[in-house]
Length: 126
Image (cartoon, rainbow, N blue to C red; front, side, top):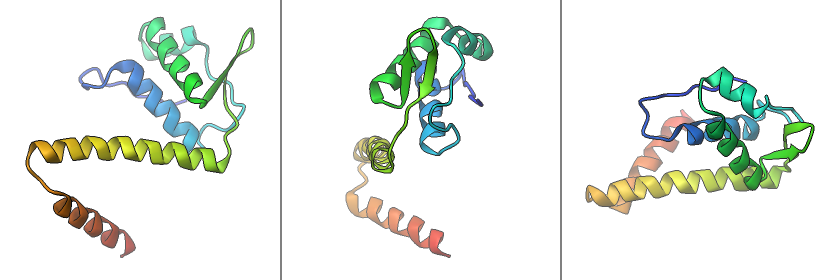
């Protein structure tokens, strides 16, 4: 599993771990029933605290992305396509909320954001 930690990022390390694992699951890089490294092994590999890794795993278990099986380990959950789509839409909504907050703070309106999105989509079609 490939996880990159940035110590200069403003995003907490447990969030970086959580986001990258979530994205690998939702994109199909990590397949259902794949066993993840133990909390201690992951912490050692990433050179972070055990509590940091534990928090990321627990949050992902609460989201239904991972499943913890006592005595066996932590595994990628079996997600259906509708569930994966909902998760992607939730992530997009969170990111758009951040963009809206930023746009509001610099006095950029919805029309400008719509124009930017239209430009991005038209570039994608070419």
